[in-house]
Length: 161
Image (cartoon, rainbow, N blue to C red):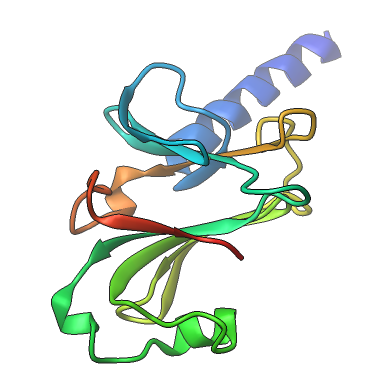
């Protein structure tokens, strides 16, 4: 019947998406917590790094988790970082940032000024991305996007947006 074909197709698409996508909405179900504080939790499993981001204050869920500080980036500026913050924040030499809000999340390389991955709720809506009642954003990214290693416990900073 048509309903069985549609169900099979939807299962195929879901599996293909998980296998091929580099960034997806949602939590890592089983994994190791790398770090947790009042505002975010970073979790990993074999293939993914997950970010659970909570509201820092009343209002929107928004921020930027900066990580992998590199001394050689301390004395330079990042055009991408400056574009995002319009000189409201000083670039402090963190190579990567997971910049998020209720509508989208992206992984940015501030050392090379490149966007590495982006999820946009308006293009691919998912209840797994933003929990309105808890005011939490959940996003996971494939480890392959982190060529220099995963975020380390003492090598990150959370910026408000």
